[in-house]
Image 1 (cartoon, rainbow, N blue to C red):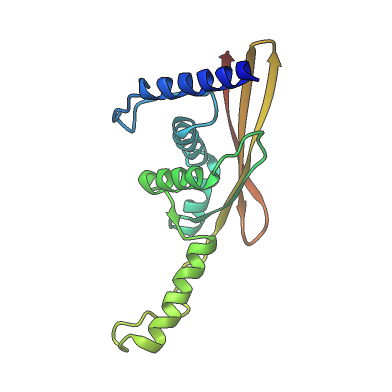
Image 2 (image 1 turned 180 degrees about the horizontal axis):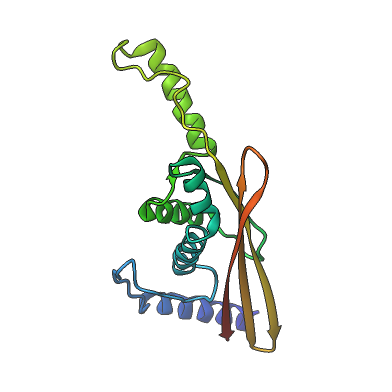
Length: 196
């Protein structure tokens, strides 16, 4: 019994000493610097994928065809991008990266989707009751989207021993909201080899 107490006390003492001499170091890094610690999907993957897919979609014939036929920029809405990967990935940051890339490109216009659009409508409703008639925003002035972008983020994991290869495939589609015609399909793959 004494040996168990001695071993337990020694273990606790070692853990306590180890935590006292921790070598953790934190430093600020440039947000644009590519850092990949775990091999999982990260901010660099999100940004590079969004930029590539935006470049793809805005350099396809559907865009020039639309502008030629209608004489104006199309209005896009970014809908749901489903995470079907093996990881927990917050696709909201990926959607924001896509929206930012579309706006920065300037070839199309963008309208709010989902919860944010509903929040705008609630604010407009409040203005009807609480704002002055001169400053209250009118109903029925929203821009209707011409196209919706939707897609999925998938992954394949191949593992043997201490090595692992993870392939991410991001698929996006652009659909004409009036006709349901798919006018563009794009994809981007990222492959990471990880050795433990």
